[in-house]
Amino acid sequence: MRLEPLLLIVALAACNTGVGTEVSRAAAKSVVNPIVAERFPGIPLEPATNCIIDNASGDEIVTLATSAATRDDAGATRIVLDIARRPDTIQCLATEGLPVLLNTL
Image 1 (spheres, helix red, strand yellow):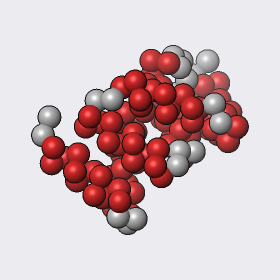
Image 2: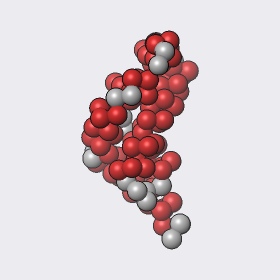
Image 3: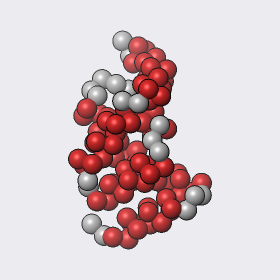
């Protein structure tokens, strides 16, 4: 993989701008989605991913975004599972994900 996309993600993430934040969050979501799909089958993907991203620290989002380029799947999985265990994330999943899940039944 080329180094330029990784550097762009890190540079934009380091800039505390709306564009940098959105680029970092989008890159992080691209890493979180497959982890959520694999580790939590049956959970509505978009609400669960949003809950995890919304409850991640800025450093965690940058690390997840960077792992999109470095392919650090083990590190990304660890971060996602840590975030998923947090009380605020669990509350978010219950509030945002559970209604979506119940509507599919």
